[in-house]
Length: 625
Image 1: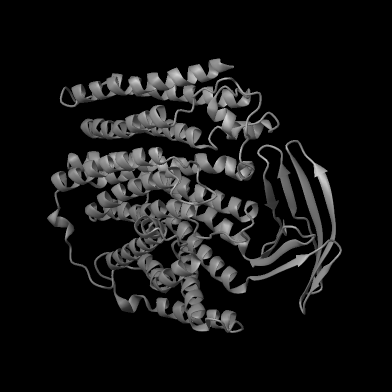
Image 2: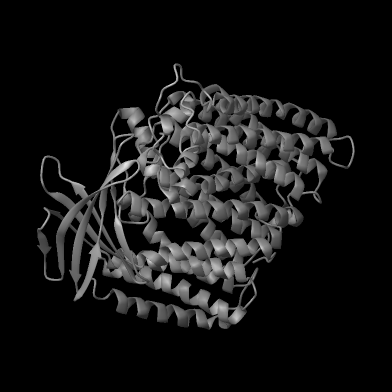
């Protein structure tokens, strides 16, 4: 079966070679005529086709268990189901980077086809900037992360895919997340090309907005899938735990969300061009930083793929070159437009947008510092610390209140200046929101004041977005839908945090835990043999508030690699989740039982889907703020 690896490797080499005619004809065509040379599109398509063939070669090596391929040997096993053999293709460092390269080529080819009506030189420069990134990834793959390295002599069996990656949600999580990450490369290349040619305008913004939306939608959905996977697979019992690799996906999302709003303003008002350029560079830089942190081995996380410093050093050096190029273009070619400086009152849409932009950048800074500070401290003093949820909560929550209020106010205001006497209803909704919040939170004495203000702010945004649906109907429907989804998201998170409760205890089979409100009975433990693992399933009877529920968490012992995983059992309703996990206690007959009641978990997932749906509708309906 080595034929598939050979085809994949030589296709990769030929794909790299295609970059040179693309660059040659791009430079040649830059000043020749007003029409884009079809050779550029043809060679770009050929390059895409070769990378597709290379990726298919790797897939086939996994499907046929070609253990002469080092990547297959390290990440597959004959006992694995076919689905996980295929998804194992990108469930590792080398395969995931090949998928990155595939999406890079796919996006630049779609860009060439989709941008036919735009300035020819802008299209060419975008291709050239994108080819710099593509060549870098080709070299990175071939030199340090070749997915087609051989093992000799050929082993009879592989080491197997990490069991926690053998899950349907995680199988589709990386490709969707990469579409978001790699979409930022087109944003980066397009912004640099437009800056170089002084082409940033309303027309450009309309085209550019499509790529920002595409990247934002996929990144949002990718983060959602990863969060759902971590919730039920890792047994964390929550939707977000500020894990470093969670953070490196959140940071470009924050930058991308801010960029999206700036592009909408640029499309409408021809302002905030500097914001657009800087955020475009920042989004891609943060995406690349995420790649560096995950693949350098300096982050300790269940998500990390590689622990080879040489790979991390390559990405860091490549990132430095890209950042240097981007800053050179910005400072040399960007010309500030004096017409952008338009006076506006404090009570205006511009003020609201700028305030929220700065708050979003503050959130981004907090996450960035919390993620990289432990790394620098380790390098400087060899001290190892972990920055957890308390750090982020203390720094983010106070600023979340004005953020939610200004997010509610912004769409209600007019450009330049709004009349306060026309917005009396905003005060009315604010009062209603805080009264509602008071009655919800009053039974919970802990952090009563801050929780009341937080929930009140979230309710305020929630009520305002509902009003927009009823009042404005089809006007800015996609924006209103995303804002409504976000208000539901924040409200669900806050109520989930305030109303959750947890019991942690140790039980043997047949024993019962009991308190005033709850009874947990460990009825029995059964053993089942599956294709590539042995399952030990616990049967629990939960009695709570006169209701009964049977939950069945399990422990899985995988045969290759030999790893034990804990699988949560979750009973989901519209209002709450009942979540239970069990783990062995070393050298004891007891099992550690963790039972949680998590209100509004379903609404957290639904709200993110609503946010994404708003973005999808925005692709098909060209409406501004």
